[in-house]
Amino acid sequence: MPLINFSWVIPGKLAGTSMPGGYSGGTQSLQDDIGQLAAAGIRRLLSLELPDQSLSLLCKNAGMQWEYFHIPDFGIPENVDAFDGVINSVQQSIEQGDAVCTLQGGNRQNRYGTYMHCRKTVYAWIR
Image 1 (cartoon, rainbow, N blue to C red):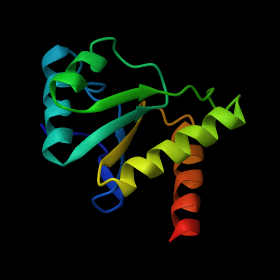
Image 2: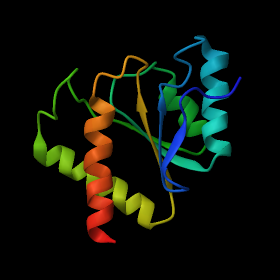
Image 3: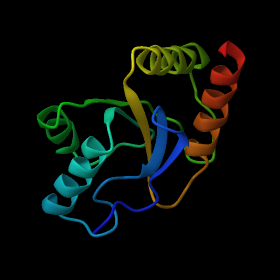
């Protein structure tokens, strides 16, 4: 089954998707979704909500870097400096040729929109 809601925001560089394994559940589904992300060229995953605990190990086994950055439901980052650091770190990954994917849960609690808006603004600014 294909990964649900995967799309490139900046083709080959920045993507977004629902949380892997989130719709069909189970370890096999999570493993399949991580495999699909790896096959798409994703090398770094940024989760905006706390995912399944096995995600970190599966990412490592697939050769991907995984990190979690908390953004409250329907909110904005609580630590602006830390958020700025994440944005800059993702930009560095993209500049080094690593495709990055941001993960968001299925209920779309505006974390994804907040992040992607900031991310695309920085990308457009430095181009």
